[in-house]
Every structure is written in C-alpha cells, then in structure tokens.
Image (spheres, rainbow over the protein chains, first blue to last red):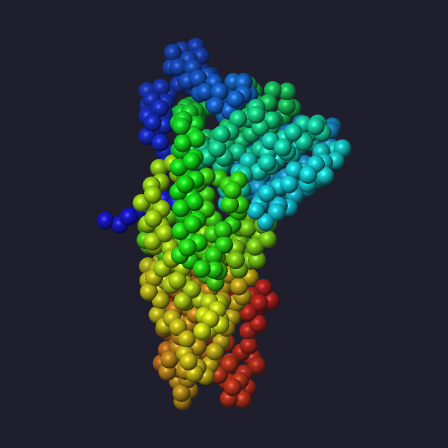
Amino acid sequence: MEKTVYMDNNATTVLHPQVLEAMLPFLTEHYGNASSRFYKIGRNAEQALYHARESVARQLGVQTNEIYFTGSGCEADNWAIKGVMSANTLKGKHMITSSIEHHAVLETCGYLEKQGCSVTYLPVDEYGRVPPADVEAAIRDDTVLISIMLANNEIGTIEPVREIAAIARKHGVLMHTDAVQAIGHMRVNAKELGVDLLSLSAHKFHGPKGVGALYIRNGVRIDNLIHGGGQERGKRAATENIAGIVGLARALELANTDLEQKTANMARLRDRLIAGVAERIPYTRLNGPRAERLCNNANFSFQYIEGESVLMMMDMKGVAASSGSACASGSLDPSHVLLAIGLPHEIAHGSLRLSLSEETTEEEVDYVLEVLPPIVARLRAMSPLYETVEKERR
Amino acid sequence: MYSEKVMDHFANPRNVGEIEDANAIGEVGNARCGDIMKIYMDIKDDIIQDVKFKTFGCGAAIATSSMATEMVKGKTVEEALQLTNKAVMEALGGLPPEKIHCSVLAEEAIRAAIVDYKKRRGEPCEELSCTSHCKDCQKHN
C-alpha cells in the first residue's frame, strides 16, 4: 500500500478526534441558536458558547469578555486592523507592520492605504526577524497600530513580539499580533506578551476550519467589521457557529496540554529533517533562523530546480508539502516572505516547506529523508542550470 | 489540476539530456521567472535526427518540453517551425490557464534551436527570433 505522509501542517491540520466528538452534539441534537434563551435548546447553546469562551480566555491568560469568535484567522486579522484604524482616526491614520506578514494582514493594509491610511512595511533581516528598534524608529505622532506576527507561516521565524509590544505601550500605540501559526507550537499568553489584540485560527491546531478568534483587550476602541444582531457583545454579528466554537475551544485545550513535551518532540524531528537534508543534498540552504524557529517548520531552497516539480514528485511518493515558488502559488512572483529575506528569485523558486505536527513520527521523517534526495537529484539532472555546475566539477 | 497526459510526460519525460555535438542549441526563459528550457538538436539533411531537452521549471514546463521534443523528432526543420503552443497543449490534453505560457516557452525553445542551426549555416532567419521577454511579445494570446 502506498504510504502517505502529511508534511503541510502550516497549511492545515487534521481534526483531532476529541474535537470532533465535542462538536458532534452541536451539529445534531443541540442545534439551538444561542440567542434564543427563552427555551431549553437555545439556553444549551448559550451555555456551550459561554464555556468555550471562558476556556479560550483561560488558555490565553485573559478575561472571558475579551475573547470574540470569528469565522477565521483571516477575519480576525481584518477586523483587528480595519476596526482599530477606523475607530481611532482622531489619533491618526498611520500603522506599522512587517513585509513578511500573512496576506490577510498585507492585503488589509493595502486596502487601508487606498482609503487614505499610511502604512509602514518594515523590512526584515535575512532570517525574517523584525528588529524592535526599527519598529520604534517608525513610530510617529499619528501612529495608531502596530501589527507584527508572532510566528511566520513560511519560514518559521518567531518574532520578538513581547519587546515590540512593550515599545508600543511606551508610545501609546496599540499592538496586534497574528498568532495563527504560533498556537500549538509555543506557549501563547496574550497578557504576558503585552499585546492589545491577538488573532488565532482553529484549523491550524487540529480544530475545524471556518472558525477563529480575536482577543481584544478591554478598553481598546474598535469598530465592527460585521454589523447585524447583537452577538459577541454587539461587536461581531452572526448566529454563532457553536459547533465550530466548541471545537476551537477543545482544540486549544488539547493543543496546550503537554505543550512543552510536544514542542520538544516536534523540534527534535524538525532538527532531524534539517540535519538529514543538509547531509544528503548539496547546494541547499535553510530559509529562516536555526534557533528561534517554530518547532514544526523546515523550509529549504534547493538550487537549480523548481518547487512545484518537487511537490509533484513528492506527491507521487505520497508526501504532502508546499513551496514558495511562483508556479506553486499561481502568481508571477515567488513568495513575498522569501523575497523579503533577500533570496534571489531563482532560489526562492526552488523552495520546499515541510511542516510537521505532534502526530508526525520519526519513521515518517526518515521516509521523507529517503525520498527527497533522489527527487532533487532527478530534477537537477534535467536542469540546464545544473549542467554548468556539473561541467565545472569535472 | 493536470491532465493524465501532462502527468505522464512529467513523471516519464521523453528525450531528457544533452547532445554532445549538437548543431542546434536553443535556450529560452530565465531563472528569475522560474522557467528555462534548453533544446539540443542533431540535424542532418534538414531532418531533426535527434532532439533532447533540459528544463528548469514546474510540472507543466517539463511536460511541454517533453511533448514538444516528441513532436519534432524525425521531422524536417520547416515542419518543426510550424509547431505551435496550441498543438503542444492539445497533444497534452490541455493545460490550466495559468500554465499556458509554459507551452509558449516550449514552442519558442524549439524555434530558438532552429534559429541557432540556421545562424550556424549562415542562413537568414531574423524573422524567427524571439526575445523570450514574454511581456514584450504580442504574438501569443
């Protein structure tokens, strides 16, 4: 039987069986609308919603009424940025972010620029790190918000959010962090981080797709993104996705259980991958930092070949992964993150991202290390760029 | 995403390699764009006796180069010049819209090899030249 190894957990994760179990009653007999508190099944839904909110707040180290449920991490990012910028125009119209944020943040910023806001996109160093001093230097009198992700989804860089949040606070500027990739891969406590807003997305930590959350510190002035009925304390209308929300809360509880042990194990396997690739495949570089890196992420560039072909051959061997090449993303340019860390286009095109989960085994990692080198060798043998290298060696 | 034929030509590409004393070599594309195709031909009596390719690029790039070489092998130079990207795409059972440019590159690569052949023999061929700067070109849609 053909083996399947899923190495794309930064894209999405498998639903945890206990999460499914927690969700099912709310997809079947407990179908009540949480706003319908005048009858039993409505009250059941309301209760479930409250417990979920309380649980998420506890996990993040914040108060229950500071957690708001959304339809996705993308929505949480959109809301945080658009909502804060629009509610604080008296202070100003400037915000600061980084050049390696997820598209959910960057596209939102681009939209705000069209609306008359001004946005500073801070460059990053060769490891994708945002220097806190650069953030401080970019702050102006009219700066309302800083948005810097906690961990990067492509190259795994962990950003100095705590330091940056302290700088933001010192200058009276609000701080948002996109923690979508960080949850489940490191301890995330919004209070300790000192941020005012924090986004997360259930399907990145073995929860269901279609539900996320935004932490909004009490006192932050923020406009609605979605208007309508009074759900989420009047701040985010829509009949609550109770099943999804219950799933998110359960998934977060599970993700944070034995977190240190799980992240240590993932890091060990990630390092095994990194060492194995370095050993077996020449003309390779690791993208992103060696330390201060998401425990489950490895991103490589293989010179002289292109990423989509690698993915297709990996798929033929049953391995699922992703790439930052232009072809793989359907655009003309390779990943903006890889370009932001200074990779030339052709090196960015030859990238491969492997991201494991707490379920990944050593056997699976070794299988990847077994199938990847011949794939790279085969594609290099077909490449006109490798031809010259080979000739020079002879 | 890709047809069965494309997957076949990707997984089992035909005519991969170089020709030692090729009398026609064409190379198009650039690493910055993520696509380079190099075609080697051995042409005798105006017939393409042998043809080989090397490609740096995605699944569609490899499949279209493979198919293009299959389609010109054994043909005359003039017949090979008639090869269009549409013919390559059709032979492959179609390509997703964002990959059509790969078939264009394959057509240009074949053409570039023939231009090289003609240049080496001092034959006129200016009108065949392609700059391989796809944005400048109005020829293909």
